[in-house]
Amino acid sequence: MTLLDSLLVLPSMTRTEAQTILGCFLFRGEEVYKQIGHLSMGEQCRVALIRLYFGGANVLILDEPTNYLDIAAQEVIESALQQYSGTIILVSHDRMLVRRLATRLLQLEHNHHYQWFEGTVEEYEAAKAHQQQEAMAGGVEGYQQRMMLELRLSQLLAGLADQKQSHSSSRSHEHLPKSTQSIEDLANDPVWQEIQSLRKELASYSSHS
Image (cartoon, rainbow, N blue to C red; front, side, top):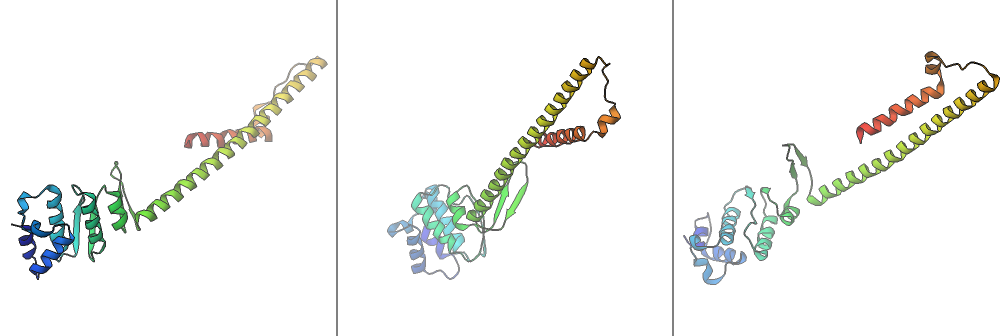
C-alpha cells in the first residue's frame, strides 16, 4: 500500500485532502506514492500517527511517538497533537513533547509507587521547587535549633562542673568528708531535668537526620 492509499481507506477521506495532509506532514510531491514497506522507520512512524490522528478515534494511546523522527518531523507531530480534540495517553522520554502536551501527569517510581499530578509540567516543576524550598528552609531552621540546644546543654553542664568544683574546694578547706547527691534529689533537680530534656530533644534530631 502506498502512503496515499493508506489515507484513502479512512472514512470520508478524499484524494485532495489526503495529498494536502501528507504534504503538511512533510510527504510532498511524488513521495505520496511511496510504498509503506519501503519507508524508513521515522517515515513509518509519521504515517502511523497520521492514520491515528485522522482515523476518527477520540482516544490516542502513544508510546514514544517521536522516536526515530528528525527535529522537523517532531515539530510537525507536536503541533498536530496539540490541536487534537480528543484524549491522549502518552508515554514518552521526550521532555519537550510532554511539556507541550501534558495537562495531567502520572509519575512512576522504581519502587512501583505512583503519584498523580493535576497540571502541566511547568506547574509540576513549580510545585516541586516550592517543596524543595520548604524542605531547605526546614533544614536550616532545624540546624539552628539544634545548635541552640547544644549550646544550652553545654552551658548547663559547664555550670554543674563549676558548681561541683566549687563545692569540692569548700569541702576540702573545711576538712569535711565529701558527700554525694542522692538519686532522688538529682531527679528533682530542675537543672538536671532540663539537661535530660535537652538530651532527648537532641537525640530526636539525630534520629531524623
